Image (cartoon, rainbow over the protein chains, first blue to last red):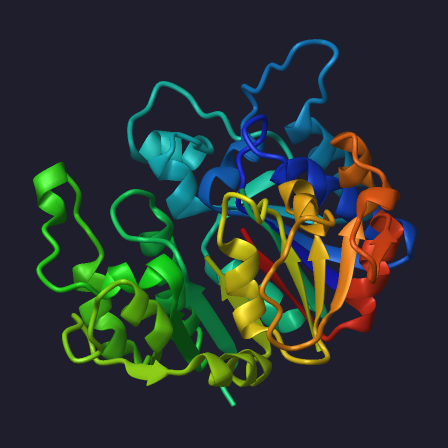
Length: 130
Length: 118
Length: 96
C-alpha cells in the first residue's frame, strides 16, 4: 500500500513526532511505500536545520532525513506555516531579506495542496497531532 | 459523496487551528475537490457573530469564512448538541450552516473519502 | 470502517467522547500517547455505537501501565499491529 503521513505537533514539545516516526518505520518494515511526510502547524519545526538537542536525545529532523533518503520519501513542509514561524529555505530568505535560511537538507517547502494531494493519491493518510 | 470532510473542533483566536483548518479547506476546493465542513465541540465558537479579533491584535478568520461560498464550499454542518451545550442558536451564526444531529454524525464521516480533523 | 486514533486522556479532555459521537458500528478506536489512560478500568467513555477498542502497547509501557490494568475487551497492539489496523480499516481519522 502507498501511505502518506501528516505531522502537526512540534518536536520536543509533543509526542506526535516520535509517534509518527515509529509508525513510519513500522509501515516501511511491513513492506509498504511512504510517498510523503507532510509537516503542518508546529510540525514544521521538524524541518529546522538549527535543532541542537542534547547528545543523548534523538535529532528528530535528521532522523526523518535519514529515513527519507533511505526509502525515497518526500519531506514536505507547508510553506505558509513555515515562513510565518521563521523556517525559511534560501529562496524565502532572499524574498523576505532575512539574514539566513534554516531548512534542513532533504526537506522542501511547498503548498498545502501537497497535503490534499497525499490524501487523494495515497491508499492511507495518517495524521499525528499535538 | 464529497471527497474531503474537515472537522473544526477548536475555538477561534486562542490557537491558529481555525485559520490553518480553513486554509486547508480553501486549498482543497481550489484543487477541485468537493469539500464539506463540520463544526462540533468548541469548534462551534468559530461560528459566533460579532467576533472582534483585532481587540487582541489578530486578523481572525471571518474574511475566510465569508469566502467559503466563493470556493463552492456549501456543505457546512454544525452539530446541534454542541450548539445547545454552549448556549448558541443555529439561526444566530456568522455563516449559513445545516444543523446535524448526533445520530447523523457517523454517517457523515463514512460518506467522505478523507477526513481531516482539527 | 474508519480507524480513529485518540491521543488525549479521557480524564481531562473531551476528545475521546467527541470521537465516540462520530463512530459507526464497524469503526475502531486506537488509544495512543496520553489517550492510553482511556483504556484503564476506571475510565468510562461514552460509547454510543459498539466499536472495536485497541491500545498501543509502547505507550502503555512508557507510562508504567500494564495490559492487566486495561478494561476487558481492549486489544493491545504494538506499532506493527497499528500498521495492520491501518491496512484493515479503510481510512484513519486522528483526534487530538
